[in-house]
Image 1 (cartoon, rainbow, N blue to C red):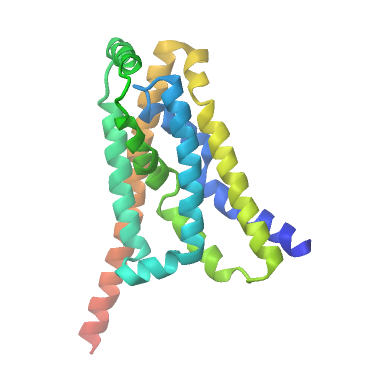
Image 2 (cartoon, rainbow, N blue to C red):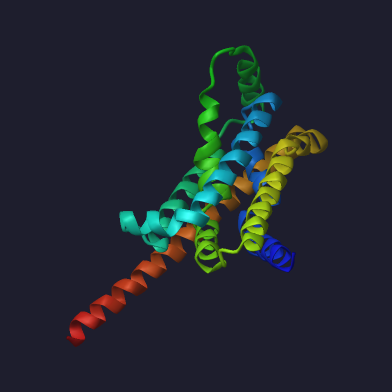
Length: 225
């Protein structure tokens, strides 16, 4: 029981701030402003499921996958930063209030169009929810955790709990727009879309700085030889 409690609390404390479902829910509203409530609910469920799968894969085989393809964490950060910045820019450049209402009406009328489902994994689950930071934490957890039953059960239940929080936050994210009205919702969408661009650039910068530092070390070592 001690091992279970320690693993559960440790994983929650380490991973929950990286996933950050509360802020992710606001970004979710920004990226799905053209969808209906039913479509957002479907996406919320899928994002929670995909987040669980991606976290589990990162914990157990993440380091092997990165090593197999020769991908470093810094390269992952650069790629993830580019994707987030691009998604944020798309949200900033999205339609105005009247165009949004028209888009929502069209969304209700399309019976077989399920193109919105493609957003569930990319870019909402990855890299918005489970980005380079979360994946690096998961990889570290997978390599550092003892392989005892208590730790393994605590680890997996903590991941389930985090994904359940993601589901709840995303499932009811659209209520934010109902409470604050159309103008307020549009303002929040634009603000958080801009912040999403900033977060993407920040992640990109951290990854680029790591790559630049590594390049400088390699070059210095080559010159010394």
